[in-house]
Image (cartoon, rainbow, N blue to C red):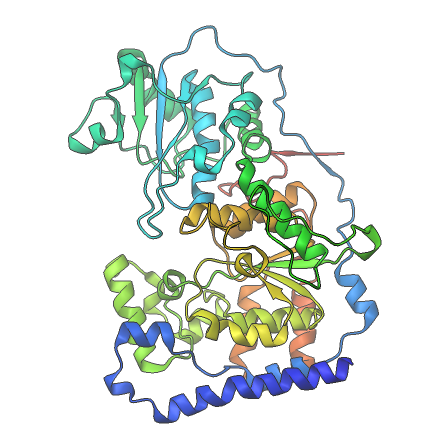
Length: 509
């Protein structure tokens, strides 16, 4: 049966490659629209010999079992509570407004920092305002994403939090600060500012006006030289206070359940609640699954300045997009593709992440969940990965349109569902570093969960070697990822506690 699956996969690969070869032969590239070409044209597999070997290679049952073994106890425990008994100040110095930009995970880290700054200043925190994301055009608010009542309740002994400003400060709106320079707006908070900077520059504004608004705010609090109580408070916010709203958690639980207990027949949809998995829940038959964060959207492809095999037209299209969006502020563009890849600066394509998984020992019986926004090149770009791993699912394949109605078109809510599923998976792996990668690596470290961190420099060098054999490739991958599967890495100076929660958020047993 397994041999038949392999042959079927090879046949599928030939079906995949042939149209792409024909397209390359007959497409009039000189007349192609740059934007159309860059989105619709997908080059043939770039690592065809490795791909053919991966499809024919068989993994032993023993190796398969080893892959799913949970991480051993590493001697660290969660300790996000403050070292001293929490207490609120007798008198608040005023109201602190925070305006956050970026995507879901940048906002998440900003919220944690906002709570910490409010504690430093003895201020009352107003639920942070989320700016409309300029890339994803998402206007989701705090309460659209996070359970606001849980947030306030968990932190009630640490800081005062209000959902809205009282009437006397109702004038302090985002529109108010957008029209002119205001004495109550702090606009020049330095990146990674110290606690003393806030005491010197923001506290006087609070004391004079009863309110202060900080914008921009992302990354405006240092990770070093802060009192341990403040660090622990940031950890408490990130790992305890911030949970998603009920409908995101419910959909996430349903997706995890369907990955663990896949139904053979389609399940009927009930309009009153999420679909329930009709399989009998039997712990002995629960499936294991891997979540892949395939960070390969057009933004990522353009910003990396790497070559993804689409030829001159694709290079021109990405260069044009890069110039319009970042106006020449992409330092990678001064390096050649070979230099970028050998330094590990190129995001892994769906094909390359598939080859990495295959080399690690996963095979076509592995269940994958694809956590990703719109993939650059669409389904055609993903098809090689799907050839390797046919049991690949995502939100659309696992949930009905009715179930997805509340998150449709909302990038932050879509990302929240992926984050939730990623946090509850057996193994998580991201195709390249980024905010989602950093947030989930830290969260899963906090929970001692297996998380594979691709060795980007090693993989870049291996993929540049067009003559490498499958056995050499696999051996190099296995050796290069031996200690990159969730082992505790202590935070170094200037590094984020949200990515490296030990030792600030964790204590040695």
